Image (cartoon, rainbow, N blue to C red; front, side, top):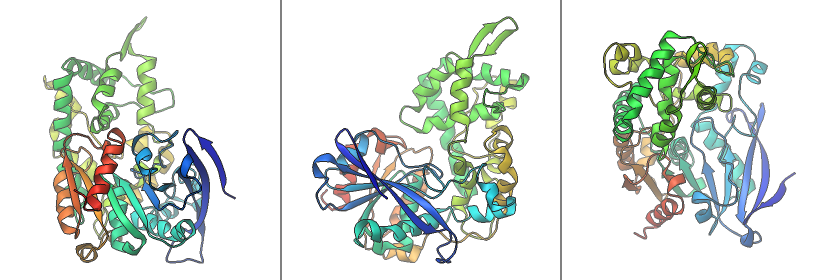
Amino acid sequence: MSVSYRQPGVVLTDRRFTVPLDHDDPSGETIELYAREVVAGDKAGQDLPWLLYLQGGPGFGANRFVGKPAWLGRALEEYRVLLLDQRGTGHSTPANRQTLPLRGGPAEQADYLTRFRGDSIVRDCEAVRPEVTGGAPWTVLGQSFGGFCTVTYLSLAPEGLDTALVTGGLPSLDAHADDVYRAAYPRVERKVAAHYARYPQDVERARRIADHLLTHEVVLPNGYRFTVEAFQSLGRMLGGGDGSHRLHHILEDAFVRTPGGPALSDAFQEQAQGLLSFAGHPLYALVHEAIYGQDARPTAWSAERVRAEFPRFDAAKTLAGDEPLLFTGETIHPWMFDCDPALRPLRETAELLAARTDWTPLYDPARLAANEVPVAAAVYHDDMYVDTAHSLRTARAIRGLRTWVTDEFEHDGVRAGGPRVLDRLLALARDEV
């Protein structure tokens, strides 16, 4: 039963759907999806077109907005919005260390998780669309990984789309994970250099923290083993508009004096564990590299292997000299499944996914080349998470796609730019600019 309630300026309705676990076996096992319907309070009784929002990730539930901030306010001027918790996330049937053992051992868990990629998410959307819209096509807004899913949607079921909007999420159609990370590490290095140029005092602070972690065993209050590699991974913050400032604030009060000498402060450790733990989004770690699997080649811990090609990211070598410590970015590594108590029980499952060689294609280049759906995409000029060159090559491969290439925003531009970003994309898709 749907339940409706109010927040400032909006009416919300909780909606739940039952979909097949495997859409190729529609009479088999099912899972539940959760979505939150949002409509402007003064339009609640109107017959409005629908906009489906696909969250970035993978592994994150849809944003929990209060009222109508960011892009949502602009969308609610003309749409009802469906904020979907993609399968395995949010209030949808969960997939985590507590629930996955219900599937059986690591092999059964890995098989189960192969159905949590973009192709299954798109088929979920098509399964629930008739119930939501009465069969009418809807507009989709895909942020980051949600944009990857949108390109899969254009490949598998374009008839379900009225318009497709992508922010920071045009994937390469054919790149292996190795290609993705080989392009990523130099971008990350540029972001780190920009951070140190803004906050030169952080060079010594980061080196001091790294040296402490190399010479001391630190376990965070939640049981996370805080290694120097884990500290470096805080660099994933640098891809957001305010990420550099947030990282600086974390670093500036890292140490306190104690009877036993300098130690990492409780406040610093509390912030670090909140940023490092995958307890709230384990699928991000489990299937992150799998979203690039499209052929018989395993991903095989791609980010870890490719990192070896960039020795400047080696903290021990850096501290032996006088170079600034390099942070890393949006990468998943096997050591995370040793450090994080939310991931430790899933280490063998992750290994099996990394070794898998039967990935199916997520995109259809021929269908994209013949696309007839209006598509517009925001491409951020030096996006740390999604390679700009890969995105622009894909943009050229999708018939009719119009791009807005900007350096005004980072990867989270749809949040920071809010109504202006969505307004620009809608105008592009409608050929109004």
